[in-house]
Image (cartoon, rainbow, N blue to C red):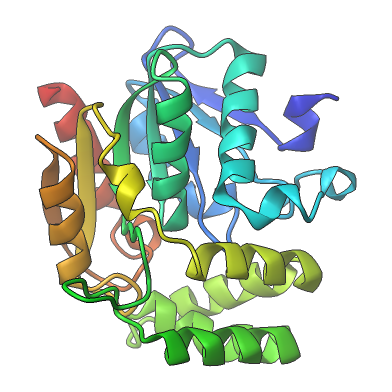
Length: 266
């Protein structure tokens, strides 16, 4: 299979620069990185892709069993790395992709040598001694609503997830991205995302790691960022002067600067 076509791989930036691999979250695609790419491309070789089931990835490659686990998405990441023969990559994962990067790095540490987690959450459901931001009942209701009326759910939830009510165009962009995703594939990715628990996987991380959080985020509250920092030895937590769950759209300059500062210090 042609991996570049399957995952709609695009490469930009300095051909001889260190490699950044940017991975999108649920309901999104590589287009949501477009505002940070120009800054990153000045110094780095930037690789973008769409997971199967998202964006312009080849829908023929969809396999419900594979993508019912975060391991399936991690396999996409590793196959893109193998196809492009990428080594010593900095993996930049948004939302659930941060945990996908953890899984991929555990399998191929020679390929993924640094991690940048943008608004990560290893577990969305509250547990004893852990605040994920949602009760089990909250997640059940969310998934039930999503599965019964995906387009209606997208129109209602995307602006909430985006935040920044004073900038409605951002919420509309996320709504459009959600609605462009095949509903059947989105339902599987949503269950995989919101029912995942990667807390134990965080303990496997040995790569230098940057955690980026927004000061207000309905999907990943501040307790989550602190938990990820405290679980990954030597990791660095940066709170962006931004709100919402997608700082690459709402605060692209601050997001790009935090990434480049981290890489410059690593």
